[in-house]
Length: 271
Ligand SMILES: [Zn+2]
Image: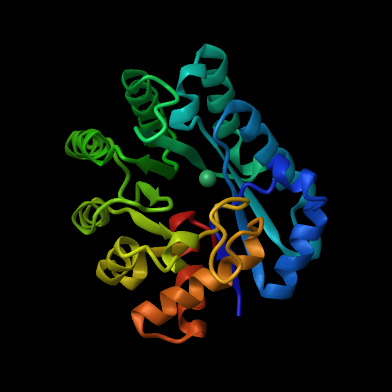
């Protein structure tokens, strides 16, 4: 069985503090059947770290690594012409740099770490960039579903969204909102919270989602799935998310692994 962790920040400093190296992470992945990982950026610095790690560790322990570059809503206030040139330059060289997507981008009104109007502006700039370069994006949305959908609907109507726009990562919106995203061509990303006992909403989103639109992720080092909750998260935990997908969808783990692996490949145009 092979698993694709479509979202893991393996460059995060938490690993260093925990005494875990990138080699350790990939070794554990190999033991768990996780052989593809996308490392997302959220700022210019972390995007550079994602690209660096994807180059430096790709193939170690048989794990293929890919990266994404983008400015998260928390970091929207840092967006300037230097950042934009960095993003454009990276995306233009995406093949050599193993970049598969723009992201994380979106809106986060829960933390409000950047002003909302700035978040919207930076989100729209990167949405246009994704369309211009014909590359999928990784959507981060928290407590901002209304504004996020408004923007995406407008882009959709104006023909500025790709047929497969990207993935709603760590989807926390309602069933209705997730269904609208699916109609626009999105994949839906599930991770640790799907396994949390007090989480009633995410299993409903999963139940309503067609099997061919589901991808699995860990968002490591955060959101550790049950039964490891409380420990630092690693991509080798993605099979727990997959097992929960299998349980809720009433399919075998093998089927869920194979379907979500293929979905990850379709989302990111990998063979
Ligand atoms: Zn993330």
